[in-house]
Image (tube, rainbow over all chains, first blue to last red; front, side, top):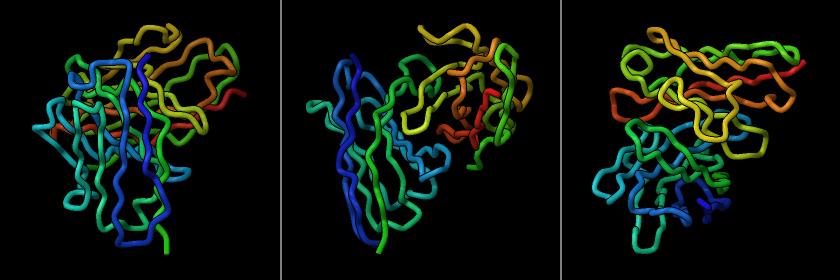
Length: 120
Length: 110
């Protein structure tokens, strides 16, 4: 059974840093591109970042570029999101998401999310 | 990257059919046959319902169907059931090699 379990969410102050983790199991982690998607309270889904299966390529939404860094450790089946210079508008539930292996950019498995709250 | 445009809400009676539109541009929906639809219940993670415009993953009811014309994609739910009441999001591959999500549609079963 495919499982994605996020952790690391917390209440932090503006300007602080935090690292989210996502532990994957039930599939060959190193074969899949992975994403982080966030959802602010009562709002829609917003794509944050994507990383290639071997970690060699990453992309970011304009809103987080230069502040967030996505990475992965395929030996540990773990995806990360390092978030620096956090802002109030980064407050959201952060989902770890698996991309399908067929062409395209579909997301077939989602974790349950980890909550980040940025507030003074 | 601007979000794809969806109606905020759509409603229908049990047994009816409803259609949710998803309007993008020639740089996303209009350019690729990589349109996806996700269903999300309150407090739950999204679930993939349609991929590559019109394909259903294993286990998804055939009451759900997708299509695309130009820059607009559509999700149709036929034989509407109470369990279909949820939020629905479209997504598309974009010319920036990134996904873009729709604004989301709340489906209400009357």
